[in-house]
Image (cartoon, rainbow, N blue to C red; front, side):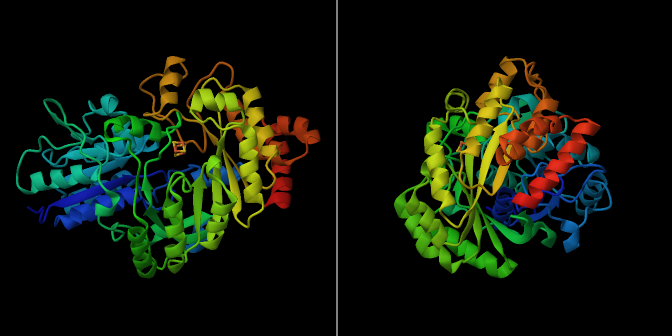
Amino acid sequence: MSANGLRVLLVNCNTPMDNLIPAGVSLLSAVLKAEGSQVRCFDTTFYRPADFVTGDEARAMTLQVKRTSFSELGIHPKPGTAEDDFRALVAGWEPDLIGFSVIECTHRLALDLARAIADYRPEVPRIWGNVHATFAAERIVGAPELDMLCVGEGEVAIRELARALAHGRRPSGIPNLWIKNGGVERNALAPLVRLDDLPEQDWEIWERERFFKPMGGRIWVTGTFEMNRGCPYSCMYCVNYGLNRLYAEQGGYFREKSIPVLVREMLDKKKRYGLEFAYLVAESFLTTTRQRLEQFADLYPAVGLPFWVEARPESITREKVALLERCGCEGISIGVESGSHEFRRRFMNRNIPNDKMVRAMGILADSRLRVSANNVIGFPTETRDLIFETIELNRRFPRVNGVMCAIYNPYHGTRLREIAEAEGYISPDEVAGDYRKETIMRMPHLSPDEIKGLQRTFPLYVKLPKARWPEIRRAEAPTPEGDRIYAALAQEYTERHG
Ligand code: SF4
């Protein structure tokens, strides 16, 4: 059977100017094209509302990364609105299936787009997928803007849906799909795919501008490659907690792609797309077998692209760090999250002592890798004192190039979302915000403004002498005086620490 001629419009509901090729949508396109479907993608990335602060800008404004500018590369936001351009594309191309990839931050955007085509052929299914559709399924399934949800991974579901539509069958009984047909047909989960069985990603659906990604103060032509899917851990604030729970009967959600298959695709795409940098999707790069890491070290030099990895501190050893250096790894982000061992253990399911983290950072300090410490503040029940434990822990790290500070947001599918709802910090129907910019939680002991003030001063508290802390405290305030003090401190920090 094939889905010959079926026109499928994939809608990548992305936050403005967040430029990184999404492997998931690229894979869906590849699966559909292998079935004979025609595929186009409507991508919201370059639609930027007036006065919108992008995630990269928010990080630069809070001293976490260097400023970069897409406009220097001739990349500018599109002039029109996403809704108008989407409506025109749908009217002109007349798709037979419209698939929205939606994350929690883009839930409202997806609704706006779906409403913009409310008059378009009602028999054409509108399906929503990705993590938000998976974990907020019960809450959003009633929305009139959508006809189906993909709960869980999408490759098998979209292939079966395309086959049914191409053959004029009413979609029913398709694994992973929730289908609205008067009631809601909730189909069971399909077996997880083997990553090696998937086709290579289809990047022909993306504009050339989509390959430019800021990293370490520079903008690189970057390709995204899925090395693993999911994570072997289940931290309570992370979506992998929900994915591992959803797929518990299948042994969890985590799978690895074999290294030769990964490297083959990288070699091909490096040449075809002129890549300068590789973004490897691997939630905890070093948490794998020694044999796999050695195979990567043997085969990856043929690819030769600089890359950046994320890792848990407990996975750091001198041997593994030497291996990363040998492969041309540019830098490493270490998940620190909180400075309180007890808080990490109780509220995150991360049971690593602080001394062990400091030792891991010491090993990295001796390497030539750039090192980022990933911190998060504003967790449910977290206090100002606990945030200062995180600052104190960061001060013990011998060398960190990037002091990152995200703001916790209660994403659906995480255990901490359930706690935030139970504590009354959010109402059940609220959607979470952007972890780089703000919290949606209302905690009586720590206001959103105080969290934002701590976020912007976090690197200052970490890197400047403690004698400056009273001054830094005044820079937390969102007042003209606080802003003035912050601007002076930020300039000093940038001159000293880059
Ligand atoms: S290690 Fe990272 S990716 Fe894995 S569950 Fe924890 S936070 Fe999520």
